[in-house]
Image (cartoon, rainbow over all chains, first blue to last red; front, side, top):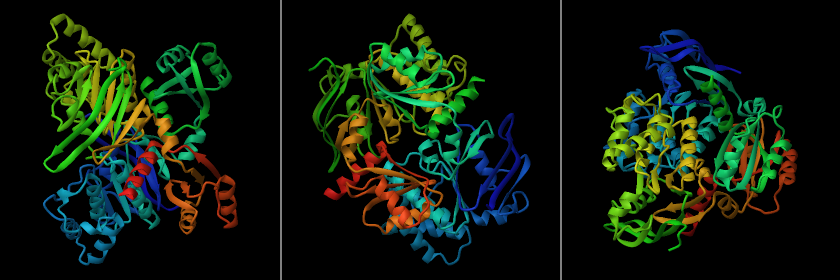
Length: 307
Length: 313
């Protein structure tokens, strides 16, 4: 597979904080690559370094084979960057915002491309509306259109759906899937693990480094714990009791159900079932469920912070 | 009124000029439960909360919150509830402990009570090594738990949380929900708004608001069962794009979405099952690893409801 981003031993420090710490990572052509991690893990810093906004302190990276330090300007022409606080001009219309960004990027002929983009975003009817009059979801779509007007080959999206409602969020992801199909490589950061599930590969970032990076189905196959879902009542009582069983590693309540994470070497499914049944709880359903990326991520982080 | 009911809302309506932000909203919240109030931005969530906590007067209808009528007894309502806004409203230039002391003072706790509650809050929110850190320097998750404990200092019976976890990471979110679960143990009722639907899974009971109206209510599992009557299938394949192109041309597929290597489809016929889809794909010589019928997510439920709403208009 062709590598479009290659990062070697990259570091970026702010005073005594290693925001990015000797990091290695690769992104392949045409993939949707996701960077997840807790607040302060260094995701935004890494994206800013890759986009040429911040200079790295050491290490190197290349994008499309272009050197991250020497060829900064050449790289900039080929990338689109949607920052967390991407600002549109509220007192300009949709059309005017796009024209503005086209000019910033020195794109002369952009009328046709603008129409195509607006239609893709589903906002073609609102060309004359002021940006400040748009809903949150429409603003994000307009911002995305602005970052695409110079036809970049790779898109950097930093938490693009934070604060966007469910319907717009789903539409936004449909647009991203279309862009990927058109051959745009996408690197996205998100705090939402269900969004990570939608990507081709996922990298967990923590304290400036990548803890693991793989395809979601492989991450799940490698996960050596089991997860049991128990629908029961009274839920808090069951929770408290299960907490006393040390061999169960982690317990979480979701409304009327518990998720128990355990290692089958230490305690079997049958043993847990017996624990549940021998008490006077109402048990409505017990089943093993496949882990979500969120389950795995949280287990990884709990392990880290416990160290 | 039934003693198990913590919040009772009937026919609540709020108009701003000729715009109706909340229209004839009715629901109840049981004592000690986590109630999720869900909807898109601008659906009427915050307007409803502001009426329930007594800072906005309804145009018509009423509500009983913690035993007090929000129109006749506003001051009592305010004393029996806690409120945490989206913006956390902490004093960034005060330390975590100073924020707690300040809010305790506002709620009129006496010295002894204040001391007790502040140490409770520090422990509950896991802030013991952050007491002397300026609120402005705390990371998102700590800030959020500090804001919640500020809202709980005066032992309210009901706490209102407006989009509490917007923009915090998965670990902090999980810790936050653990804290919420533990306060319901003490009989506190939690009313939470969110547009982040994975989070709604933590709630005991839910109501969806859309354009100012409640469009459905129920437990998360009942909603999944009752709203999405059609099946959802997940197909894993190394070539999801090819699958999508093929499904797009087929009349039996209503909705298609792609999640990495997985394709989700919703067929429009009852008789479509795993065997049918697998036969169909084999017939077209399309590669796939496995097909599963999956449980819809609450996001699927929400989007389905909005779709139905639009079709009815």
